[in-house]
Image (cartoon, rainbow, N blue to C red):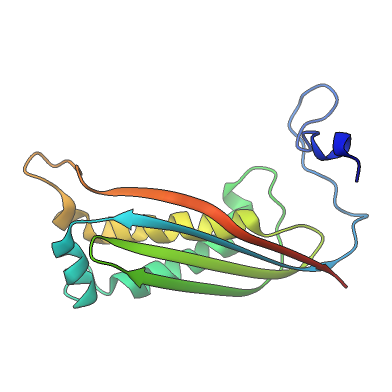
Length: 162
C-alpha cells in the first residue's frame, strides 16, 4: 500500500460525506486486537471490590459481561463500523491499591480489524465498574473528585493472512 493511500481518510467519499469502507474485495485474515485502560478509585472502594462487598453486586463479574456485550455490539454504536464475526474475547482485570486496570483482547477472522471492538470493551467495562461503585465514590456534594478513567489505548494489533 502506498504512503499516500495509508494517509487517506477512508470513511469519507470524494465530496467529504461519511461512508462505510468497502472491504468486500479484501482477503480474510486472522486478526487480534488488545486494548487496555484503567479507572482510578478511592482505596476503600478498591477494597470493597476485592472483598465483593459492593451493594450492587460482583463488580468485576458484571464489568466482564458488560465488556463482552460491548465487543459484540460495537457495530451498533460506532457509525460506519462493520459487524464482524467475533471468535473470542479475553477480559482481564488487575486490581491495584487505587485503581482497576482492564485489558480486553478480541479475535476474529475476516476482512477488517477488531481494534474498535477491543476499545469498546475496555471503555464499557470501565464504565460498568464506575456505575457499580458510584455511591461509594461520590463526595459530600455528589461529585467524583478522585474517580477517572484514563490511559485507554490499543496496545496490540495483529493481522495474519490466511
